Amino acid sequence: MDKRINVTRPSLPPYGEYAELIKGIWENGWLTNFGPLENRLAEELKEYLDAANVTMFTNGHQALAAAVRIVAGGRAKELGIAPAEAEIVTTPFTFISTTYSITEAGFRPVFADVDPVTYTMDPAAAERLISDRTVAILPVHVYGTVCDVDAFEELSRRYDLPVIYDAAHCFGVRRSGRGIASCGAASMFSFHATKAFNTIEGGAVATDDAALAEALHAYCGFGQAGGADAGIAGTNAKMTEFAAAMGICNLRHIDEVLEKRRALHETYTRILTRGGYDPATGRTFETGLKLLPEQEGVSRNFAYFPVIFKDEPTALDVMRELSERNIHVRRYFYPLTSQAAAVRQYDPAETPVAASISSRVLALPFYADLSPDDAAEIAEIVLEKCRP
Ligand code: T4K
Image (cartoon, rainbow, N blue to C red; front, side, top):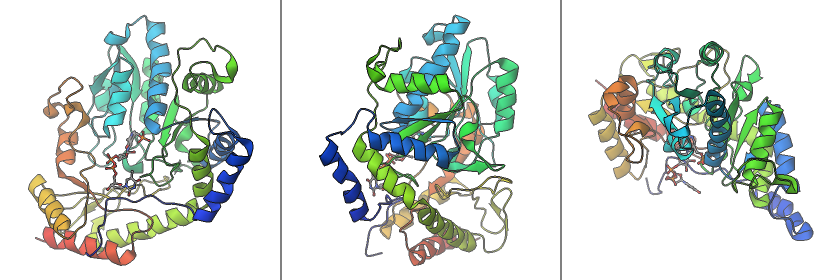
């Protein structure tokens, strides 16, 4: 291609709309620290995400780290477990932020394998890792595919453990007609520039628990939000008014953005599944490619378009071929986060399904402004490489 195509490209609102909204910042002199635009966006997101409470953060990572610190930290305290001894059962098939949200708070991540169809944490594998040191469970709705939330709820009840969801990829996803924000103790959404909905940098924690929302709010403002000492050691993770303004403008256009993403998803799927396909598993019949499954009762947000190849050499070959044509895909998510130098080194053989998927996955270019013709051309190149 003449032009470079990256794995993603942010959706921006019309410039004039953003300029109009930030004009008010020059008038009121309010730039950050829980300003009117941040409050307005939080209210709008409560409605959009179908969440009882939404606490805004400077980015998704800080939001998740705060939820881990407060929710898992609270459980560790109740159980009398020192943070260094406390374990959180999580998935290694995710972005490194998930794992570092655990280690940053001083807890140990313990890695469970994933389901081969959804790539989300397998509840049975997670249950086998629960011990008297476990203080929380942290699954990820990876690529916007919803975890087996019923099974995690059951584990939560049975072992009296909070479930904190990394819902970074799950903006606006609904299950059985309800926003997934109401699952578990808390769910973190990322509004990073590369996400379907962005506030430049940004994130939020949604929770049904009003006291937790208040604690999160205090935590992101040095534990002194509103001027009073909330009795919680805090940090600075507040969203700025410029970020909130971007979110307000982008939210106005979210339906068009999602419609464009849906159409691209259809283009990729149509071409890559020539020769047949089972939507329930995402398996194609001729090429051995595996796409994301369709989940019954779950609305999709078309966050990413990952493709699992039959083996790692094929994936790398496709990546090379695309790169030579100026098309830059990403290995989201390789390597497993359990292999990161900064966490204890785990043997990938302990999570064989995750290790296998991770070695074979490529995320194809996927963003609202990718032209349907470019998507079709990319899909044809991939298909050509995978034909038997
Ligand atoms: N949990 C999960 C499961 C996550 O996936 C993430 C973030 C988090 C937690 C943490 O949420 P945040 O703290 O980020 O809110 C990117 C994103 O930075 C990251 O948000 C995302 N997940 C992750 C999967 O992808 P990189 O290192 O791959 O980004 P980068 O800078 O290489 O950009 C990717 C592509 O996007 C490039 O090809 C260029 C393009 N791009 C990027 C930016 C920033 C643009 O065209 N414009 C831009 O402004 O991590």
